Length: 250
Image (cartoon, rainbow, N blue to C red; front, side, top):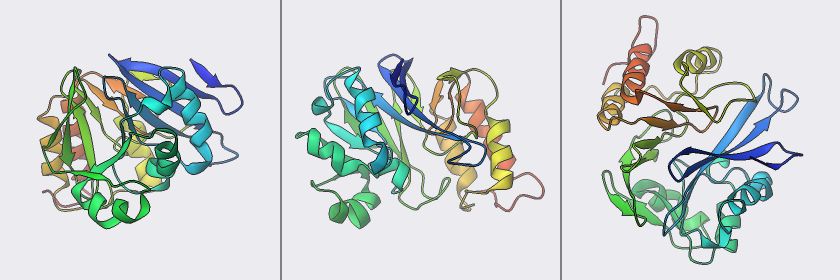
């Protein structure tokens, strides 16, 4: 459902109670076009994963409001500190009086404690977060693909992995959900603009994520993927360690 015809922002359910909010950026803004996604997790205590930039706040809020009043948000979470992940954090805290900023323990310690307008909650690796009917689990993933405070949330109820910048797909227009290959397009983009930190633990961290057996990969750029998420994560690990790549196996 398109919630802002001018920006092209839309919101679509990609798993039970999990909604992808996506705003296309045309080639006039980003060469080749791009998309910025956020995910709304609906439950007794609703959670927004990623906020978009400050300039996108109105568009993202409109999309949230199409499903539930943004004032009801109880958690505003993100994978790592970057403008498209948390630029509008304080804007959402201003409209959601009971919302708590949420990230990794490192993010809460080194960034959120100073930058957020409300005391943050830092989640340790493997820590569970109960929202009501569902439980999310925080997975530390430092430097995967970048930033040492990086981590992801896994919804155990729908087996959805909110996987941040993994499998970043170029282009502005994407279907909300796909079963097609997303590794090929994301690797093609990485070949031209390598956004991976290439840490020595990349492969072991990808295997840790694969062991969760996700059936939906909620990507922050491009379509969400439905299918064998474990196989795709392991294939990414193989791509990172293929001959000619700069990463070492972890």
